[in-house]
Amino acid sequence: MSLVEVKVPDIGDFKDVDVIEVNIKPGDTIEKEQSLLTLETDKASMEVPSEAAGTVKEVRVKAGDKVSQGTVIATVETSGEAKAAKEPEKAAPAARARCRTGGKRRQRAGNQSAGYRRL
Image (cartoon, rainbow, N blue to C red; front, top):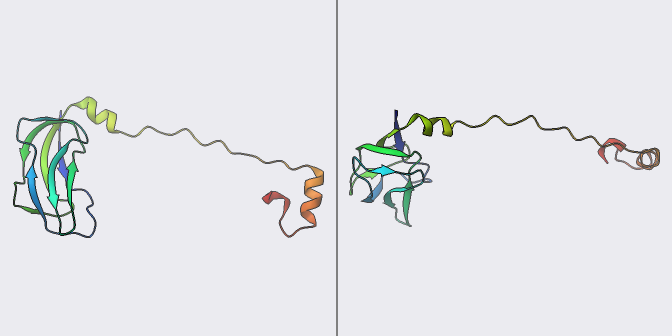
């Protein structure tokens, strides 16, 4: 089990955005991408999703607070399995494509401005 701080993600060029609703409380079990709170700017309101699944241990904001990008919303206790699933898988090396050109194409390319290797 590990503790994860869930923070306000990039919300654009806004600072000190109003929290109008908090949808979680300590002890709640939450899923990844579940709405944690609702923010309201001059232009729109938006929900902030959770970046982790687990049990809420502490909520650090309340309705009426002002938050910015990076502000800690809550502390969530996750299981070790959830953390392991979060680690990205290593991608297999990309296969290199090879283009072979025949004699006629090579000859035609020699008469044009593009080299045959660009075909």
